[in-house]
Amino acid sequence: MRYLLLLLLLTSPASAEERGPYLHLLGTASVGRSLRFNNPFRLEEPLGQTPESVSLAAAYLDLSLGVFLGLPWGGQHGLWVHHAAALTGIDQTVIAPSYAYLWRFDRGHAFYGRLGPSIVTSPEVNVGAELGAGGVYMVSGLFGLNAELVGAAYYGAATRQVAATLVPLLSFQAGVVIDWEALP
Image 1 (tube, rainbow, N blue to C red):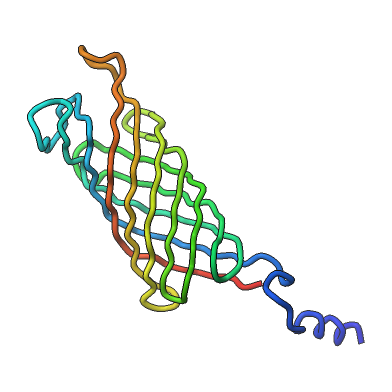
Image 2: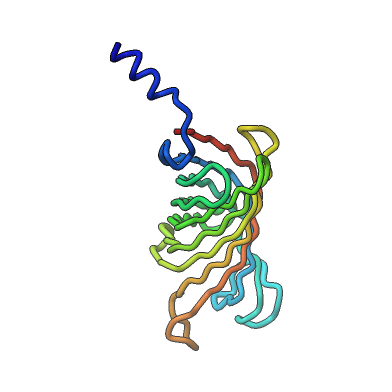
């Protein structure tokens, strides 16, 4: 009898709010490129003649995992961790744990925003800030495409002219996404 009662409780219809949180995982693999708006060390690919000129930063690979809670449709709050590594030039890696907000407005489309610190782990440790906004288009229930625009800023080492430099970057990355959902 108690097994029958347990089975009835587990299978009874309930609203999404009553069933508990909805778990949503997103994993991405993206390739990106950045514009560096201050180039005090005259790094590769300057697009101008002065240290303040815009330059291209190295291409990078970005792998990420996002965990979101909320209702299946609409807004979901979460944590998104990105790990980026330069594909050419100096062996640089960055980890960016971010607060993220994901908005799903239908089965195949979502937009998101994220904000958090950006930690350079090699070749030398540095901490900056990162703000990203992007979108997801699902090709199937599991696989999709994503694109993201990311703004970041870091304080750099001193030069002969400046005690400390601020290096802002604007990046664009695009790639694939894996979407996994656990309904309560």
